[in-house]
Image (cartoon, rainbow, N blue to C red; front, top):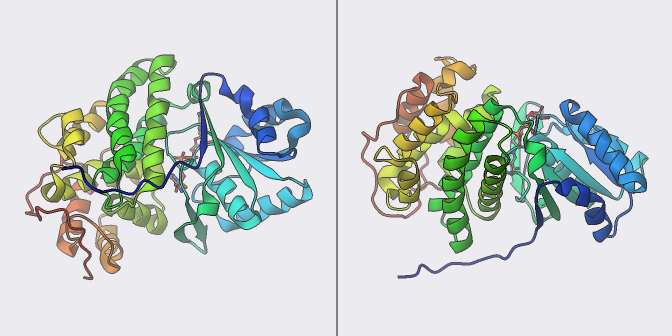
Length: 369
Ligand code: NAD
């Protein structure tokens, strides 16, 4: 039987291809703007300056201070620059950190955003903003956060180092994986997530072999778009909660943490929603979605151990406490013991098991332990 669904409509204009950076001036003008502040990290300042030159009279300046987890101090500085330059929109060139800064400016000033993603993290299609203040990361959703235009230029991803390519793609696959069992999933996210997983499975080994492989890079960026769209449309659960805890409270690196957790969070929920995770199991093999993802990550030399990312054995208890302190929706009940076991396996880098019995229906459970 066809499952009932709500499709909220598509709100972000997407331009995808090779050399599409050349279209950014037209996209700024199309929005009715004439003074764009170009944003980047310090690492990508050269590319941002080149884009500002390309924008010519449409450029109001460059702010190259974007940083991981969108610290509010950086946003405050960027807004001073935005106002001083008399800017009327932002053009964010970079990964999730730069997109996050553009969103933080947009939600405070009402500025329109043109985003040019250069990683697969997937912030560009979402209405989600995570910000850090006083060492605490908080996340909110608001329609005002969602970018107006996204320009995907495959050529810009050719410089993405293989290690970051792999972890960033696993970060993207996590959006698709959780999208399969999201209570508000709909046929658009389901279809794109299925396609994205297959595209990443085909593209990543090819990119690892030849990072300049244009077809594989195009396939990976296309997959990233599908995963980002899923993240931007549906509710995430255990995987994103745990990644948020480890990044926000223990300072673990974003993409690598998603990469290590992914097989384990998938395996945790598999006893409850194995049928919904079947596309993942079918795509990555090894008889289960969690195991398939672990072997895929291993074959790409992705990090497999939280212990390699800076987490210590004594952090595990506190991480499990924080992750189970507040109830949230997840297909399988989130128990203190279950999360402790999951974190221990991810800490040691073992292939995940599914020894703990879970529920077999699709009701999302909350727990309050
Ligand atoms: P990032 O944006 O911090 O980029 C990592 C580094 O790689 C930076 O130095 C960047 O300049 C560099 N880089 C980016 N693209 C490159 C390229 N093509 N070639 C060479 N170097 C390149 O990392 P990220 O993983 O893309 O983003 C992580 C951040 O995004 C986190 O803060 C995370 O919370 C956020 N995020 C938010 C959402 C959302 O929907 N709100 C979704 C995903 C990620």
